[in-house]
Image (cartoon, rainbow, N blue to C red; front, side, top):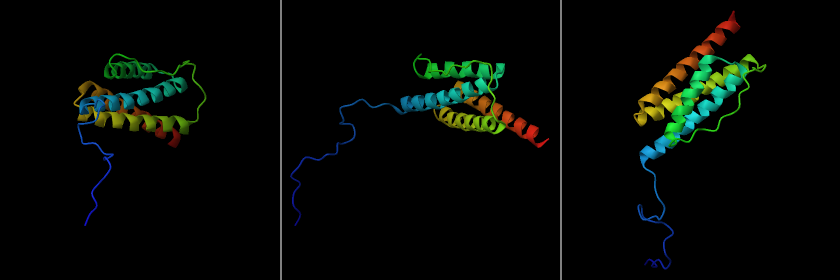
Amino acid sequence: MYEPIRTKSVHTMAGTADFPHRSREEELDIQLAGHLAALLAVTDELRGIEPSTELDVAAERLTSQVARLRGGRPPVRASVTGAGTTAESAQVAALHERAHALAGRALVVAASRADTAAAILAAERMDAHTAATEARRTLTTH
């Protein structure tokens, strides 16, 4: 009734592939490092617009966490002149909102891999960007 399969299957069974697989922990490390590196990029962008010691400290802490997760390799950083540029309030608010979202993603991954240091840093960054967004809203409404 059925014709037998004459060709070799293009599918492989799980575990028989000839390339190395990463563990769940390694995948989470890669994902967390990516979220923190993206948060660092937004932080550097904010530092270029509105230089502050608080953002400088946050950038250094993010750099050390990304380097730790990447086996000591530091992330690529954007150069920040520190002179500040003229940016519209809406642009700065959008950067703070993006940073808040990235910190939230990092927090979720850090919590799932039980990385306390990264989770604390991500939560602190979420709080800082929430406060910055609220401060901007207060200034624009008054």
